[in-house]
Image (cartoon, rainbow, N blue to C red; front, side, top):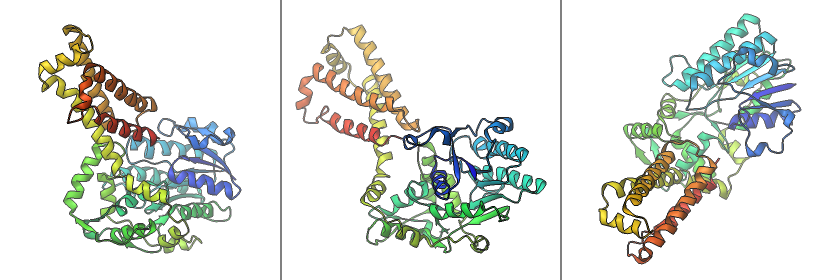
Amino acid sequence: MRVLIIGANGFIGARLATALSAAGHETIIGVHQTTPSHGNLDSDRFMYVDLTRYVSADWIKRLEGVDAVINAAGAMTGDLEALHARGPIALFDACARLGIRHVIQISALGADILAETWFLRSKAKADAHLCGLREKYGFSGWCVLRPSLVLGRGGGSMAQFSALAALPFPPRLAAGAWRVQPLHVTDLAAAVLILLLPDIEVPAYLNLVGPEEMTTDQLTGLLRGWLGLPPVRLIPIRESVLAIAAGLGRLLPNAAWRPETMAMLRRGNTADPAPAQAYGIQIRPIAEALAHDPATQADLVAARMAPLLPMIRGALAFVWIGSGVIPITLTPEPINHNLLTGLGLNQELGRIVLYAGAALDVAIGLALLFWRRPATWFLLGQVGIILLLTLLASLAAPQAWLDPFAPLLKNLALLAASLSLFAIRR
């Protein structure tokens, strides 16, 4: 079967592509941009798509010869109306026109037009459209798959909960009352393989959950054990404090804890596993699935570093903004004058350099705060600017290296922090 996977470079989409290829299907990797891991793949397997821009007519030619389509694209931020609703609706309309027999929409448990979060509401729009086309044309192979919390290496939920579990004293979220029913991403992929069987009439909607409900406390303990860490006492965190943290997360790039995340956990993420089992889908208990995929030292390091990386980025941003604002607002004029004349600049040129440098520093700081994925050139440029400023300061005031407050020595720490951001870039 020739299967097009939209969002195949994402956490779930990539696992689906691997599982389908291993099962003998011809997979087409539908991505908006490639990643380094795609470098060794046959270019014939790629299809460059833009789910947020294509209308139905744009898909017709691209879907020629395709037997099945899986939409695994999704995000928590950005233009969710285009990504989760308008784009998939146009895709499904094209699939209906071509009579494609198998279409699977990877949605989310709790997706509903009246849900609290725009993530779930936008998903529900496309879900309803797919099911309307299924009923209108009798497409028995079309299905909306709604998984619960999906865990596995590379997943956002796995990273978030592993980071919490790896803390010296992990937080107890809202008195530990929130309940989830997690499943491993490999079991989700196995379920999709069953739904693509030619002799099966799939349901319009299918919730996909693990066989066991657990609290977020239990999940934290499970992941802590998976990371090889001993049990510890959890620190209670009030829901009001979590709400404040989620609100702050909305302001920061790449923050995992956001109001949408909190709302979905608060409402509960559980369902009856029996309907999926009736189709021969067997989801393992998450403890068993993780036992077959043991953690390594790299997993522990990644979990421990996860909460530190936003701190590093935020601290760097604060230093850059402060180094731009302070010289032109608080630093006494003689100090600025001595530094600039130490570089051989006259008063007029020195003032231009001072204000230009301050503007550059503030711009770098703001970019670190709000640029979701800084480009490689920016991160390398930041390193270069630190080295250049250190050199210029050494020429202007070499005695600063002997200052008891070590203003220039601290640049070595800034350089290390900047190189860390460069090393973990995506």
